[in-house]
Length: 268
Image (tube, rainbow, N blue to C red):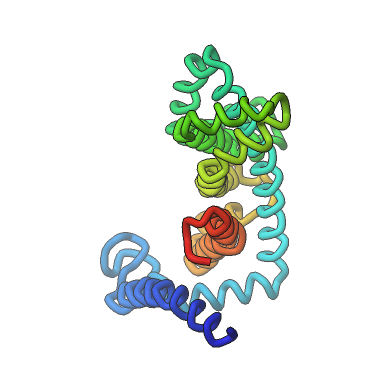
């Protein structure tokens, strides 16, 4: 059993390790050929290598900068995403069940989903102050959740709803045991996509809002840009990338696999 589990882990890990190795190799090759910050050879600060960025991460942790910034960013991401999840779920359920709302709100949600969340930053700063970051995250994430729920609902066979009505399902039980259960795969896919949008929105907000947003990973990246500290910029970039991958692999990927396994869509 343990050997089989180890083999599954190795099969799942080696493609990712190869991809990371290729990325690091290309990065190091750019350093070797002398790429600099001005975009041409000999035009500015030399591109820091992977080792320099990792050493800078250690330094930022040592001086007590990176960990508080990371925790602040994760807190903003969790609060904003939770609010977006609640908002997107309520709107999605309402739209799929009320034809008038679908006609009016459905196209609006599609438009909001395609709208870059960064455009909300100036308005959020002017009208919401300290809550601007959360607003940007919500606007970047909730349309994906609502659209995922709507799309999944549209792909449910009509026989499922006829069966629910013939069994006497009404009210909250109808939504809980039939509607929500039938649309769960698309709903989870929308949640996963919404996380990616919310994370990107949060980084954009922290970068643009700057000191108003207090500390955060985006603020570290902006500080590095202001000071011309390339290792600090790449350290912040690596931290942002690692968090995004970790949340996907530790939260959404197991949730998606478990859901598909329970439905017999992947091997147990």
